[in-house]
Image (cartoon, rainbow, N blue to C red; front, side, top):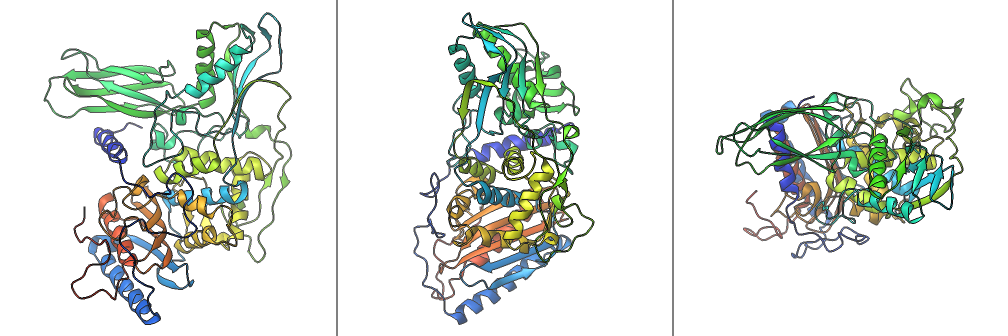
Length: 584
């Protein structure tokens, strides 16, 4: 579970790239227009004739075949589906009905289902409660309970997302506000425990098929209804004062949650890049660090996942109260909702008409429906402090723009709590299955084990992805949320995970798409507008390749650039609008 020095440096470089200030379309902070509007200053061509369109489609096919005939590219398994949203005509397909590991393209399904079932204006509610009594002397007889209900943004993140992730306030400011509310009620003494309660969702921290290598880091942070600061602690590694000193380790937020074994040594200035490795075993609070850091090194920050978020929240909340003069006689503890505590199960859904049961559990995709137990009833308590989140649409933008895994997992679980029979992963996946059935996606076209795409067992066909995109763009099926969904997607060359891709080509500002990346897996799916103004939906997925990350991305970008460049009527020697043949 250690991270290599190369990976440590690579993540730092990636973070720097994503934090660059990039131009963004005028509707980035609000809902986009009803149609895919170009953000380029160049005027698009007039619509093509049917003959010109046919010629363009043929040219696209030849270009894609040429790109994929490259020796290294051909070793991989490619799936592509491109469809005109204006006519419904298929422009290009390759292995479109085959199952692929979609990586973070799963987030398209999760976020679309959330908008379809809950709407863009759903809000989370976090409270501090007690079943005891607060007397006139400020003494609380009973436990003080911090109750999480799935809010992913109890953190310093600035919302709504604009151009890049910004954190301008302390990471625990919102929890500080709750502590202030409680003290303002007159609380001085707690004759009971401080409890972190995340029973709004079942205690299922990780998705099936997640790699253990991810669980230590931000990408694999555990899901919990009581989430603080994305369930991570930022660790800063700085050189010591002199050569031979141990490196200086700082945590943000400051916490004793981890027991640190620091073996990082400060070495001479100019002796090369830092070489730092870290290791934490699953379920352990012991963090081991080793390696070297030069005396002139500026330092580096890394996000380490919290093992039990509710426990961490209870610890931090107790500390906040004690700093405000509150005396606490009890301990800190957690209240989880374990699957073993479920009552007798009941069937909650039926298969879509015409589908065929098989051996695969229904919650994962096709097959007979799982028995799901009723959700537990929240106990009656007195609320001493509360906080409501911003609209759900704000967080869905974070999920898709920067590919935030934890938030996608929390959103999936929300489906089960609000629209399913239980706050469990199985119930949540049942709700997702019903939404996909309404989109015309058959159970055999996908298998999902999580909401983020981190699972290596997730599967989907490119055609299923395009069906979802068409469903989410339809004024008939998605009239109240299609604009919100489209605004969650990264814009080519401008923001999110596409900020530095397709820059300088016509695709910049004309492609809205979700990226996906795992080892030997890359994906890119979303919407595009051609030079002639034709709106498209597309999905490109490559599995089992040995291309470098940049190599796979380059091919995908070239495919998309070929798709949108339908300026067949340009005069000889004239470039397509906004086109620049020099690639970054």
